[in-house]
View 1 (cartoon, helix red, strand yellow):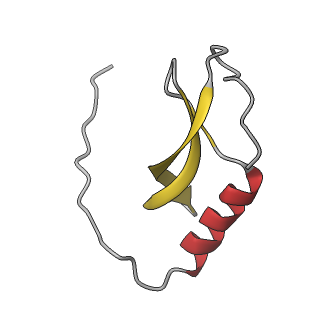
View 2 (cartoon, rainbow, N blue to C red):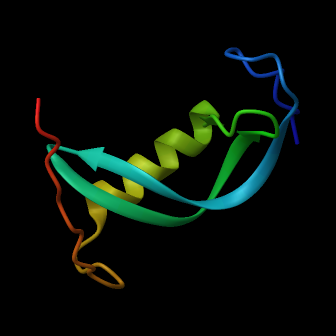
Length: 79
């Protein structure tokens, strides 16, 4: 496993975790589970390695039937 660099935003240490990832594909929001993501221990920013991003896109683009569907509440903030 190739280690992550320090966080490009705050300089904190980045560790790999399996996380749920919000992923947009052709304007549609998908929740992708069990993704190896680098997460900054200090600020929480998430990073994907190129090979992981390619696998996520391939999984989403080829998914015929999702394993689950969830309703996501939408709220609007007044200007």
